[in-house]
Image (cartoon, one colour):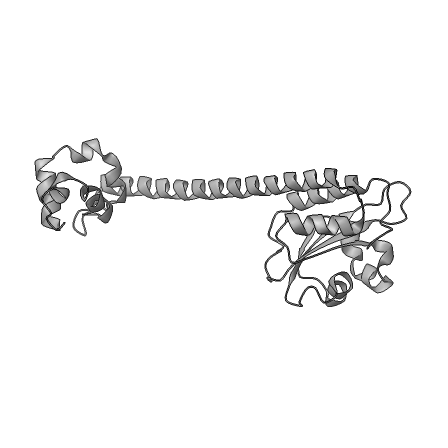
Amino acid sequence: MNENVALDLADTDINANSGKTLTAETVLDYLRTHPAFFLEHPEALDGIDLPGPPQPTASLHHWQLRRWRDRALQSQTALNRLHQLASDNAAADRQLHRFCEALLGANDRSAATLERLISETFEIDACRVVSLAELSDEVRGLLAGWLDNPMPLCGRIHDTVREALFGADLPQTGSVALISVPASSGQAAGYVIALGRHLPDGFNPAQGTHFLEQIGELTAAFFGHLSLEGRD
């Protein structure tokens, strides 16, 4: 008898009123006196592994039921993953909404303000907003391949780039997300939002970049035609 069924029966009058210890015999006695139990509680069968015919006999009916059950379990697992993904996306969307509200309410539209708002809203260990004009030729050269097609970049980066962006705020084993903010009218160069996590896989190449792209778009709107001068 499956443990789930036994737990269901633990609340019945056999155990609750008589004080008997729940045993296999107790369960059997209950089922004998309640022959319609599985008709009234078909979900109790979900966790029971029914025996097949003795080997080498093969029951096509039993084999078919087992395949259907395996498919049902696979579907449930996939559905659970979708539910978790939807929950994670909803949480990220709420964070993004709070970030947007904070940007709209900010009086000072400087890089320092943006760094503070990002750090307060998202679970990161380091944040820097840097003008490409501030970076050395060496660093821009190391970023050249990414800057040619600046989709958000996640994972590990060259130590020279990491040190130029974060200094001592991010260890060598940390992971990074880089977001490109294109230059708007009147600006000489674009900008890079650098987010860092101490965990090596905190940002990884396999993760989606949709929300990172939205952070970049909100940042571009936040700065508008303003420059990043006046950093604290």
